[in-house]
Length: 230
Image (cartoon, rainbow, N blue to C red; front, side, top):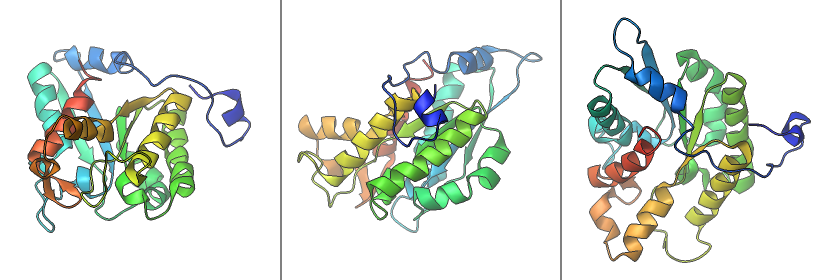
């Protein structure tokens, strides 16, 4: 839901709550339908190299990346559903670049659910520019009644994720605030990895290189996404 302040063009988020597991209730109904009542459900993942499936660059392991791990889990849960997983992500891209091609590359696929994962790369453009670009995409999707789910950043081993105020945490907090303000979905990848670190796990066990998760790391993200489909 977008509040009056946003309608009037004022650039700040209104008080609200992050969407819970009921956010995709209508989509979950569609996923349970059988032929001939069912239809194709399009899940679009827009972002950078992580949803694109880059592991140890230049290797791209599409089927082991979280968009397709989600597809596999969804097909186990919804065996009658026809589901397209569409990745419009580009390795090395930030949200400012993603917003510029949003209409032509994303909305043309008519997403039933849109996932946005840019925070890891948005460190290069800063919090304010990132927030503005994310809001452009969020508003464009909501104008088309497309549910949006934001993803907080996955790890970069050069950043100490448990140190308060680190740059990944800053972007995570910005996205949490956006999700609450727009009352849309949030997958807290950052929070999930940080919890594992605080529990004694070694971050290297979840990474294929310094800034790309391995399959184990992608599974953590996929598990968080699946909470919206259960």
